[in-house]
View 1: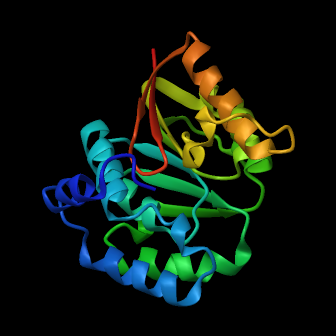
View 2: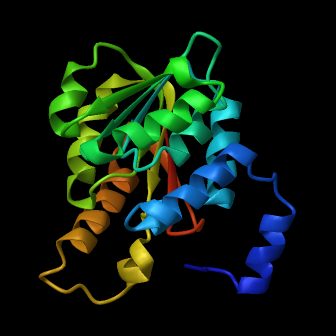
Length: 213
């Protein structure tokens, strides 16, 4: 989805950092073998995630929603040498695909996969995080926020994907559309919760940066 004219969007991409070769390979194989490949973060958003992670230099990252591991690898680029990224996904069929690319990267030993429901897994993670990326099922976004906020260090960052939800956030709400309602509720929560400060970026399908005060 383009929020800018496509030619301007192309110009921005061409004048931003290039996508690493390994991620190009991951993208190609995802499109060849995996359903709904559009769920990939993509080269431009991936470089944005990488840049934010490099600026933050987190020791511990939490990712909710791994898919084929594209964003995981982008976020891992900013990890401290002894840092870890814990990534949670419910789809066991993707675990081997993810691990293949994780192990091809420079960050394989720093990436910890968790298989199952994030609602159950998050409370069991006995650590705090400097950076969290939420990119999983939309109806649970609010629940994820409440589970992670106390595990986020002061000054820590929450990145939330798909917060513009194909533009549906500014359209009349269909009462049966639970995902759009969930995104609207989540966006309101990020705006009103006094523990964080939030900026929405019109990148791809919308990316929010929230910083814990």
